[in-house]
Image (tube, rainbow, N blue to C red; front, side, top):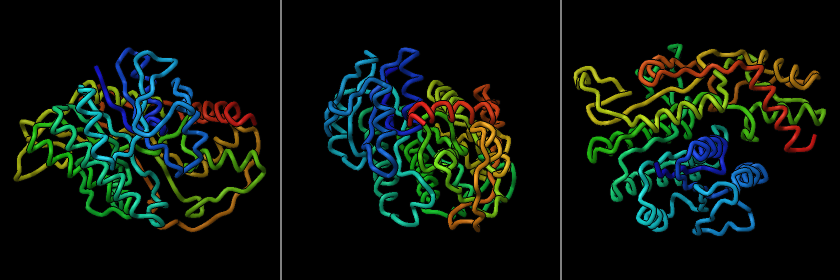
Length: 350
């Protein structure tokens, strides 16, 4: 297929693009390469896919030197005119929207970045799909939409009306916006609630990256909620496999859906929501111990209270993913952390 993958200088977008390129799809990657975190990592990912930093100019497609079936464009999703032009010229079969302003804590400091990228950017993607006849759209949601929910494991059929960060609120908004376009225009939309993704080429603002960096620099790490946290850590390769299966199986309407007892994760429209998580929550202190084991050293720790916007516990119910797409993430935590540490040492020459 010919697919637009947004966020290809980002962690998941880069990893998905590589997977689809290696199986022979035509991919156009899009990213605005903002400086929310260390751009060296973003340009490193682009270089890995044959896109030279020196060739990148805003609004221009760049041909990969490594993949004949890959081109990249630096573009803001808020730039509707250039986004529409891209859709008109390229005639995509599918779109996977992974571009977004990420981060729960940063949303407390710079809320407008989330409105611009995650709301305005997303409506531009929906409108482009509508007007340029793209009927297969998948997009990143987040486990953060579960907010104050304490019914474990988190199910896509649960109520998610109590987000506790603007980031989470924008992701729920994306799901609602997507349903509207599925209902009105027949666009098959699938929202993907990712659970704490980690692995090689990971984000520098995430726990694993921060812990490894601090440990190797002989600095203490910040351990929030005094270590009383659990996360459903999910390895990047498992996430990507789930996303590819979703792309290959566009959402369909649910013939059993009834408005009298509505399931929020399906619809009479071609609309679907999936959790993609390891379905095996890990205590934060056990996670840190696994990092210490991979590094062969003890990490100094500073215990702190729970941060605003954070939830203490995440746990994915992936029954629907297993039933509909015959898939369930399964990479063991220690294996995934070991692979990250090998990559980190190589990339930063530590």
